[in-house]
Image 1 (cartoon, rainbow, N blue to C red):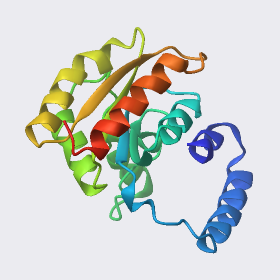
Image 2: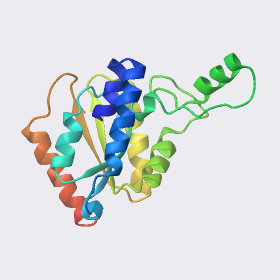
Image 3: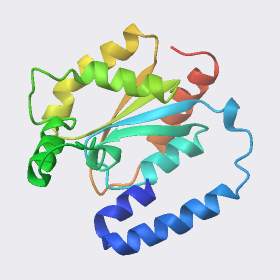
Image 4: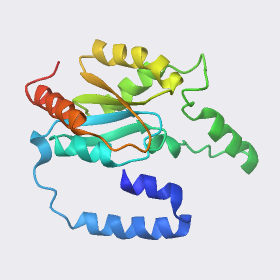
Length: 185
């Protein structure tokens, strides 16, 4: 998450150089056996602090993917290879996953989150819903129901921007991790 957030604030060239160095260093690391840790996907709107993910990892989970406005959603755009450049760019942006504040009858956010969680082999999903972000709050029941129907446990946490996670959140994440280790919901 730190790497993704840095992309919003660093010059592109500097970020790409740092990312290449990070990828080179990561290939030589021994990640150990994380197979015993519950695999969790994080979903929500704007989360400007990596501390939430750090607390989730400290609780005994490994974050395997996200669907955050300030995460992969910001740059997950499928390329359109054919046509004039401007037209390709327009098609790319029109085909991307819409922001929760934009309604599209062609897009099913519940199915999208479910499929993404399944591709990531997530054991559970944590919804970080920013207070007063009504669009994500409206979509939450649909996403939760889609996951529940597939047997993927989830939890919702309401967060405030620019506020660090407290001990209550640490306790909730630990309980969620324990539930996932015990076999789900």
